[in-house]
Amino acid sequence: MNNTQWLDELLVGLDRGGVIPYLGSGTLALCPEAATVPASPEALATFLGSKVTVPGRARGNLSASAQYIENFKHRKTLTDLMSQAFSPQLTPSSLHHTLAGLPGLPLIVQLWYDDAMRSALMDRMDVGLIQAASQAEQFGTWVNHLTLDGAPVEADVAADWSLALYQPWGALAPNRNFLVSDSDFVEVLTEIDIQTPIPGLVQERRRGRSFLFLGCRFTSQTERMFAHQIMKRSTDTHYAVLNAEPTRNEARFLAQHGIQRLNLPLAEFVDWLQAQGIAGARQGVAAYS
Image 1: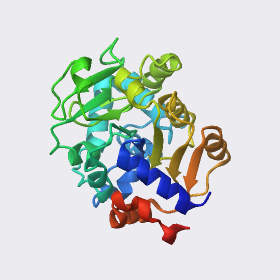
Image 2: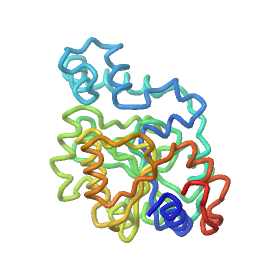
Image 3: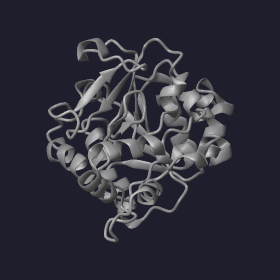
Image 4: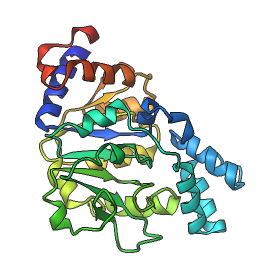
């Protein structure tokens, strides 16, 4: 099936709430201030390494660099550096605003630490935030259910939100929660196969739905494992806007999980999305056949 047919299908899904956007660090390239914050794990590892000298074996590896800083400079130093990395204010892109304006979406997943998606949602009163918590800072707590301003709420209250923004690695705002070190990920991945760290609301809202990966790569095992576990018990068909040629591991992952690759630049996909409008998705997309 070509791009035209997949785009027709997934846009109908977005229109009806049957497709869940899953945002990676690559979406930051669409923001006007993209160059002011790290927009990949490698860039974030470089930033951390510019602030604290890390050993050669950890240099360039995000979780290993973060673990070294946590071990030898204290967790507070790591949290402060993460906050510094993402402190420049980002203007939400047209993609963020488009997703924020879709009334049928039940869930958005954001696997990066920036604040652009939350900022785009701030005008909505029916939206809340589910943010991962580090066991190093909140032992025994996997996630926090929050208002967009950061006030804690109970999970049963969160169940009434029309839309939940789920951040499984945490984020800068509103409360500086970050999963970033080796130990952070080990704690979660030890339990994730039985779904303990995945909030009940996410488990419920993914049923019968597909995922649309935007700005995501699957080059690391950690990225692949989180995507695999978050997609569990959803549908068998998913989508990824991925213009770069996949690596061998990425290609295998896409095939194993029924992820249809849409081979076009993300910015071009967003331009098309805006030009067509969600209702226009049923009218055909011959430009990308």
